[in-house]
Every structure is written in structure tokens, then in C-alpha cells.
Image 1 (cartoon, rainbow, N blue to C red):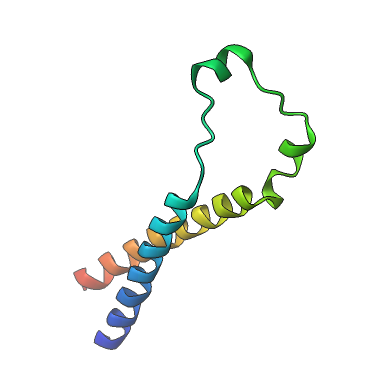
Image 2 (tube, one colour):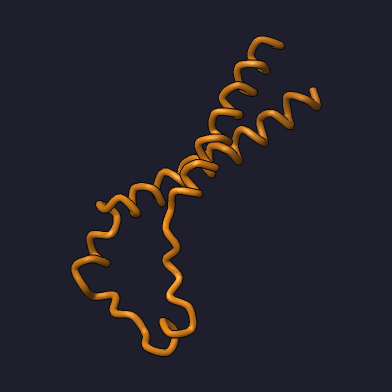
Length: 82
């Protein structure tokens, strides 16, 4: 059981580092107050194909790694209680 715990901790550290790197690579999408006043068009070509761009892929992988991080956190907490 100790070997499995160390393997999961290793995967956990790798996921943590990858999540930090991906979060820092993302660009800021916030338009601020001017975006709230002017509004934004969500019916253009870029918004429809946003998931295929580099930013879309970074966002998708950040979400995936965030979910993996949460699951590994729960698994490790259960393993340390037992």
C-alpha cells in the first residue's frame, strides 16, 4: 500500500506543476468595465471556434487537470486516513 501511495503522490506533484504552468500560460480574457458597457458579440466566428484555438485548448486542459487534481486530493486524503 505504501508503494501505491508514493506513486499517487508522484502523479499528484506532476499534476500540480502542470496545472500551475497551464494557469500561468493563459491570457487574460477580461475586458474590464469597457467590455461590460460595450457588450460583446457572441455570435461571431471566433466565439464558435474558440475551443480549437490555443487559448481554448489551454482552458480545456486546465479544467481537466483541475478535476484530476481534485480527485487525487480526495484519494490521498482517504489513503492517509486509512
